[in-house]
Image (spheres, one colour):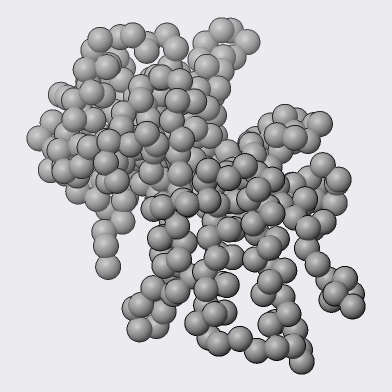
Length: 341
């Protein structure tokens, strides 16, 4: 069984010469019951708290989206579309998007609030009031929380101030977001691991803090022996974060045929040059041709013929998924048994 991201990050920190694991240090008197962060770094110039996203909030987004499925302007689609694609043509899509974003990112808010308390308590206990506070947020399985969503929410939260003008999360100066369940395009290689650093606006140009984070980033890259796309406070719109597809297997360990067809098509999208209209026409022709063989009492076709039909249909839907194509117009192109009478 492969090592989890959390365990690998902890091992990375244990092997890092400049890091100290706070729980293993002698603690000041009466400190055992107080909240503490996880690590010191760079001679205690920085305090790091580790947070892992474990609760999948996808059901919250699905529940909100379901309220709008019966609308005429709601798309019919194959696969899993990004939320922005589902809502882009709805008249109130922006408001729906913001509502969903607030609901699914509550765990990020909670983790940042807890990290702020833990870092603040640690700085008081160990008398290092001027140490930088960094929270490392690990995401290994929650696909609805892509790096753009997490980073956007962190930028909002780290910029919040109280009525006195002080930052709400005064003890956190930077957040380090790891999302190993995603790939990034454009990528350096197929093994690129994306992570994003978000700095609080008042310290984003501080050379000392940036040096600490950059050193940590280079060490993480070396530890994993893979190139890592690092985007410190750069516009994320230039990147597309894509969930890594977990390939299902049969009990024998073989890849199901439809999964193999999908993978093969993604490597060579031969339908990609078709217009949307031409693609729908192509799909309709395939579906109309194979429908008689699927009806009770209908003609029978050799297995290899049906296999070619299903492979073609799989490729058609994969192309629709690749381009996030609304399938509603397909309905008018399909024949029914009554049409053939």
